[in-house]
Every structure is written in structure tokens, then in C-alpha cells.
Length: 202
Image (cartoon, one colour):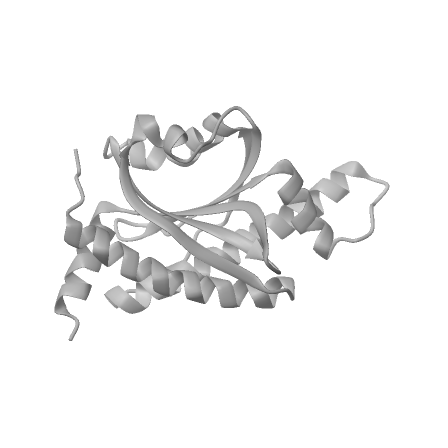
């Protein structure tokens, strides 16, 4: 079992403050509105308690999951409820199409690009900290009931630890709270490098 030290959690908070600021700038540009991101918490929880910790139940969710490859990297998970996902997509696709499959395909492209923009903001911040290039893999879009979606998204973490270290960020658009969440989940190797980088910083 991997347990985070107080120094490691502090390192992760500091990284996520920077990443959240960069992600907010990127989202404002992408949506052409004022998007504010707030780092809600950084915590380590048992994998089996993750849904309860994040207050995810049986509601239908859409998740965009992106990961950087290799031992050093992180997983970024962007979560929407169905209404929020449709609202975001409608901002870029104001006209309904006659073909539902084509409409859904375009909506999925908008959601995946949103996840990609957020992931790049987080990974670029992380890469600058540890001095290593990090590129996200192609986004994977998952639609399912909440607990099932999160279980699929966290399969990689479950393979190496029964504890999950997560940074939870929430969103506001023009002062209104959005039902989006982004989780930043670093690998164990990344966690060590982050701690070392902050420890060596002047």
C-alpha cells in the first residue's frame, strides 16, 4: 500500500494550484467565457471509498480520461453529468442535426477536445516542474453509471495500489457553478519526482 506523506500532499497541492491557474486560462480561451477553476481538495483515499468520497452514485455520467504514457505521468479524468455535457457541446454546436449519430459524434469530439485542453494544461505544468516532456494519449470517452465509469477510469491505479491520491477541482462559468469535476491522479514515480522537485526548489 502507498501512503502519502504530508510533504507529498503539500507538493501536490502546490502543483495543482499552478495547474489549475493554467487550466482556467486555457478553458476561458476555449469556451470564450469566464471559467473559474477551484482546487477543492488534495487527498488520499482507499480505492474502495473513492465513489463515496467524490459523492458519485448511480447517476449517468460522461468521463473523458487521458493519461500520459510511461512510468512517469498522470491520469486526468474530466467528469460531467449528462446535462452539463450536452450544455457544453451545445455551445460549440448550436444547430441540431437530423442525424442523431452524427450529432452525438460531434458532441463527443467537443467533450474530448475539452478534456485534451485541460490535460495539456496539467501535464505542461507537471512537465515544467520535473523537467520531463509529458504528452497525453488520445482521450477516451466513457458513458455509464457513475460508479462503473469511475471504476473503469481508475483501473490503472488499482493495479498498483489500493490507495488513490487525487486532486479534485471544480468549475464556475460566469459565476455559476458547473457540474463538472476534474481529477488529477499522478503515478507513484511522478509523486516521488514532484516531491523531490519541490524539495530542491530555492
